[in-house]
Length: 508
Ligand code: HEM
Image 1 (cartoon, rainbow, N blue to C red):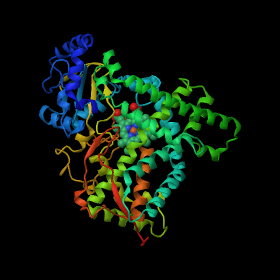
Image 2: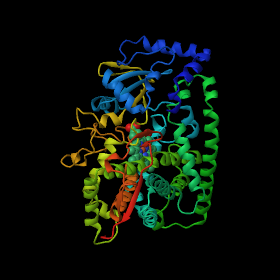
Image 3: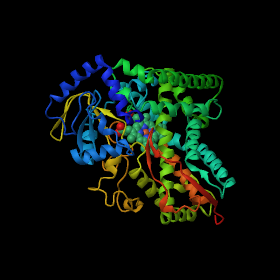
Image 4: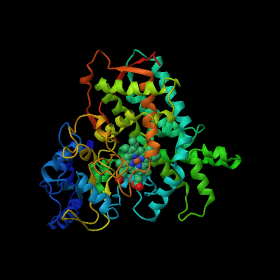
């Protein structure tokens, strides 16, 4: 989104790009001549509504919510040459994601993402159709099964225990919890995907992070996909190519290494349950007989998805949950009491005990409601003309679903802006895709398939941090003064790192 902060630069650029501008006007005329598009704010020639997305100090999801408050929960925006519809209520989300789910199961084409996913051969960007169905099935039926996710518990335990050790040795001093949690989640994902032996773990998380930032789809060049000059000036192509080469090199090295190990090793049933994701994919490849061949390219694309989807999204949830609890010591105490009571006898936290942590589950839900890691769900694209709520949405319209606005809609949520985990205690509202008022993982056909992999990466670190330590802000800062500013990047993380002082709890 950074480049959108410089309207004068892009107006200047856009006016220089005459050939592209002519094309753009042609396209805009076609769309604007349609009188039944959803309502939206006034549009300027060439840039459409881009200028309305630039508001100092506000993030895109906040700006879109404010615009929706004026123009309605189904709103049309012209962003550069792209026609967009923004969905900001549960009713409209239901119409789009469920009632017309097949029409809106597409993903818009973003050149940068297409380039790094080997031509959209991953799950999240694959066009809706047989290939997408095939790779999604591999993901849900082979890779992220309950059994396999459970088999990674020892990895999670080992890594979170190392974090606890780090906190113990730094107790009494300020620690950068954001950074620690971020690298913890990448380490867990790396070990689950690549196993213990592969090199390149650290460097890969770095590459994925940079790639995910480039693929936001909100860069100026993404808004004018037909402008070759803009693509060139932005430097995006070159940057993507360099990162892609690096990512490809690391992943291919890991695949080769795994292939050699697989050829020489004799694997039994027991070992199979513990195999990492690359090994699992290579075995599927070797078995063959698939509707679509699973080449190394597809394996690399799927692994990239797991890192991009599963890394920062989990760590940012831990970060926000800790921030909200530290800001409200009553909630922190209640969550600590619960975990200490349930795990005191054992003396440690394991995943079997986590099932009993009912209050922690409420805290996590409330965190995902107020701070969904993807405030704007991965964009959808209409695959054909469709009517929603009496308005026509033409084929190829990009659909932005503002899950952040839906989760804070005061028409459904009382005291919507307040962190109040108890709101989930006497109802069955869940994030599994049936309650459209609460969609941090999306809903419908393209809903996140990684929930079961993500949750233990959130629950175990939180439970252990609460079990072992008391927490306070540094420099005698008052809890209620903790800065909660959001940052819109790969995910909606905290703008400023969460710095806390741990004190080891001697009671446990
Ligand atoms: C707290 C953690 C996570 C959150 C909040 C989250 C959220 C989301 C959201 C909002 C979408 C788009 C859904 C839609 O279009 O309706 C999505 C898609 C996806 N997520 Fe997650 N995710 C998380 C963790 C994970 C993990 C751990 C993985 C993999 C191990 C993963 C893999 C994917 C994939 C592959 C897709 C694309 C699905 C498709 O297009 O068919 N996610 N996720």
